[in-house]
Length: 69
Image 1 (cartoon, helix red, strand yellow):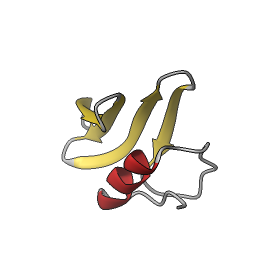
Image 2 (image 1 turned 90 degrees about the horizontal axis):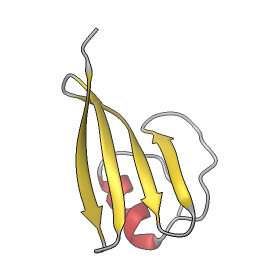
Image 3 (image 1 turned 60 degrees about the vertical axis):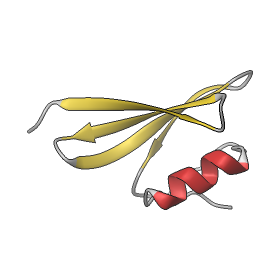
């Protein structure tokens, strides 16, 4: 089992997305939305996601996340 590693990204100038990896495999993302808090979103599986800004949804969908539009 590989140790977890993180990569921080800034999307749309104000949203922080921390991508969570195990080795080379992307496991999920921690999304920080100002005024709404932080959310962990797994890459695979059905999850109820709060309303996310369009820039975040599009970014996560490009990475292979199943985030409803």
